[in-house]
Image (cartoon, rainbow, N blue to C red; front, side, top):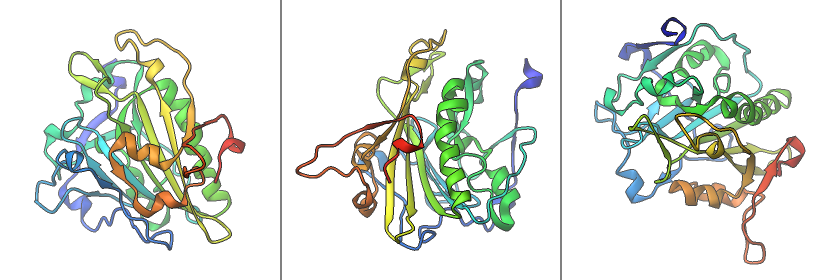
Length: 285
């Protein structure tokens, strides 16, 4: 029913004044935003004021795709020492006035009862420190969501996100997380115009207690959930830990030196591999 749908709004440009966005030096070792292939770079949405392509929010950043009207990637800093468990109020989702409205996903796609406005950056990830309230509000931008089947968004994806956040808080870790959808030419088209990503990726970087940087990649699929977008069919779907090099291949992103800190990094002797993640003990750091 219409009255139960989240509200939409637009914040004043002043809201974003002073938003620093993602900090590449947050972990100690420099972890830059990923670079893009020449073809993908042409698809970046420019800021209306001509200042670049990075949408800077409180503790996170987003770069948008013109063709898909979704984030190419998001990047967030999580400080486990200062996290705040802020309750979720009534959802109000915002268009970002720093980019043209045409580059936002049309909210009508979320009218399907099985499609959630799935946060790419989990709502609580950037909610820390003195700017926690601003960060919480910032996560409710259309630039930070993607159509996700409710079964993926509320159970499987949420389980991985909760594991990352809980460990950051318990162990007082600093964590950097990159997230985004996989854009494929054969993604299902809903209502004749909305391409729904079938897969989502995540890259998590931490400094382990021994002082070494660790970067792990993950892939989750809702392909079996969206084989018929007019009548969603449920099927098997899993979370995989995958080499960063595989994430780079399917996204046309380049994580640079970060890939050399991946415990699954393939070598001449060891072929690329993927591991099913069914619980914390399945994750290799």
